[in-house]
Length: 387
Image (cartoon, rainbow, N blue to C red; front, side, top):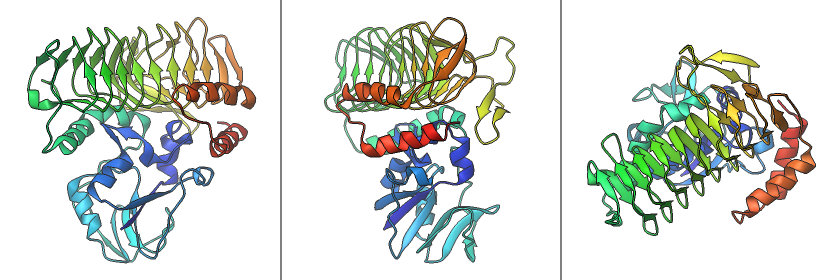
């Protein structure tokens, strides 16, 4: 079957800056991306309907018969089964929001199917950046159960100490774990292919350490935390999601945060996740161009792709950093830093596109990745249409 994950303008906008560079379904929650969860439950061909400037990297593959699924939905077996049983022309909708539709064409926000049914369950979804870390524990456990079902973990080294249920630890082939304390009492620990946990780390699940991710020596991790592929972390982490290819390799605290791809947080970078007053956290919202109440007491930084922080950088509670930023210097910078900015508490200036590309090329080369011409056109568009 041909599946197309569609973005609505509302969800794509509310999830900025993380969605400046990807469709919503490319966000990682738990072990896998939203797309990968759907692929596991509904095998087939997948593509996207997303913002026009992203279409070159994430094109739409239309056939004569397609199933369109809202990309911000979290996949469940029950909902997947209901979607698989859609007849041509049928939709699953609730309160005028279309969750899925089967047909030849579909325009988010405009298509109004004549035949709709209510969802078998109220779909859970990712609507704001903080939903990613808030729902990470539930999704990590569900992903763990699905991915490891019927499989046998690689053995745990006898240099390690395991506290809790051994069935809640899974180590993929090629992973390295030595002289580490692993506690599964609060949730599972998944260690991906060729990942590494260095000596003297202390880990409390739920944790997902994805392919080639690394915890440096002495790292302290409180779950639910996810390190996406090729990410490297040290210091202290608490309920953090790294989408992938990003580093926080040294000491410093990071909690209740979402970090995009190709980011680097320098040594001793620290981030507040709780206001001194214990008051509700407000977070920058791009569509309304204002700070929005979240209903949360804990929220750390939300950082877009290719943004960096110099050594000893201090982020205040719920700081939002756009794409392609370079934050440095003493003191707390603003709690909203527009894309392609460099500077800190004393003020920021625009980073030139030439300088951005120069840095991005060097960063990606370290992971043997190339900044493609399609990437250049995408970032040029973002630069010319800066938030």
